[in-house]
Amino acid sequence: MNEIVQANLKHLDEVTKLFDAYRVFYGQTSDLSAARSFVQQRLEQRDSVIFVVYRGTVAAGFTQLYPTFSSVQMKRVWILNDLYVDPEFRQSGVAESLMEQARGLGIETKSAAITLQTATDNINAQSLYHKLGYKKAMSFYQYRLGIE
Image (cartoon, rainbow, N blue to C red; front, side, top):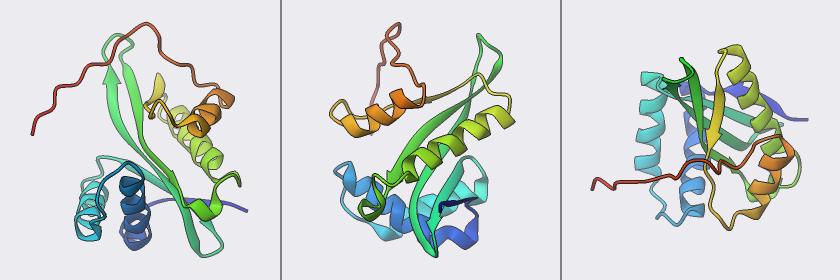
């Protein structure tokens, strides 16, 4: 059974470990100190919403959403920026539970949409997104200007 909670500072240690593992999954070097600082800032400043799934007492996965707005629709849009499930709990419904919780947030906040990006080779994630009704955007190109 999945128990999902909206993270606050009392969940900081568990979220930090999952967040660091997520970054490593995407090719970054593990840095628990920086991960903790980043997550703590998000929670303290309340500029994202983080949901954590627990299996018993173990944090099995998380998702983090950031708010933005659609000027055209004049409504909130959530960017589902991070989704990660500990390898031990994959293929057990954790990711789907997190995605449904994100959908609930979108409904609760009367949002226009939830958007996300995933790696082109992340076929498992793409299958889940399609299953849950997400559509691949084909009408817009995405551009990025790196500022570093």
